[in-house]
Image 1 (spheres, protein in one colour):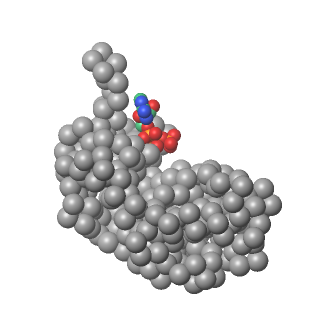
Image 2: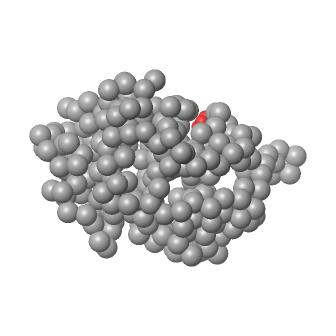
Amino acid sequence: MIKITDLHKYYGTSKNRVEVLKGLNLELPDGRLICLLGPSGSGKSTLLNILGGIEEIDAGSVQVNGESLEHMTRKELSLYRRRHLGFVFQFYNLVSNLTVKENIEVGAYLSDSPLPLDQLTASLGLKQHLSKYPNQISGGQAQRTSIGRAMIKNPSLLICDEPTGALDYESAKEVLRLLEHLNQTYHTTIIIATHNVQIANMCHLILKLHDGTLQSVLQNDHLISANEVNW
Ligand SMILES: Nc1ncnc2c1ncn2[C@@H]1O[C@H](COP(=O)(O)OP(=O)(O)OP(=O)(O)O)[C@@H](O)[C@H]1O
């Protein structure tokens, strides 16, 4: 469970200080697919980076599985990231001189309890591509590799910031099907920040952020499968 209480975040100092998150309150149950929607600049990445222990909390509290991030030292935050977090970004950030398999294995080294590589690569649909290098695979395959690298850690929370933003329709759908499958198989809480409002239809919970405030938190009563998501 993630519990956010009166969360504030500011950038800049004195006259240039801007409040980017303006007192968020939110509870996110475990094991859900969560969509975070909001226009550019509304604070989505800032919120994800706070949940990911990358950005400091200026006021308020963020509890993840009972641990308060605002009280953690840098070392504790680093351990929190290693143990609990997986990150997926719009651009895949693969290591160019490592193969697909080796890129995924990088994630395993960071975990005390990694998932078996064989099992995961079957889910990722990358078995035929394991010995290729990033410049020999498509964008969709690269994103599935980066999801593999994040998931092999067996994180309790997978944070995806615009995971389909750079992909064509078919590759984006494959990534969405994969995220749905991982959520169902491993019960990982997955947060997807996106501009694509259609993605919300396959998520259990839909958060709408506007200008640093939560406009709405909706339970999706008309859940559809990733396969049925169209745009
Ligand atoms: N390191 C920073 N220093 C100063 N201002 C920042 C910093 N990071 C973000 N901001 C500002 O905070 C606001 C929220 O940015 P954020 O990246 O969280 O929005 P977003 O909703 O993720 O946008 P997008 O959809 O374009 O990625 C923006 O006005 C942005 O300019």
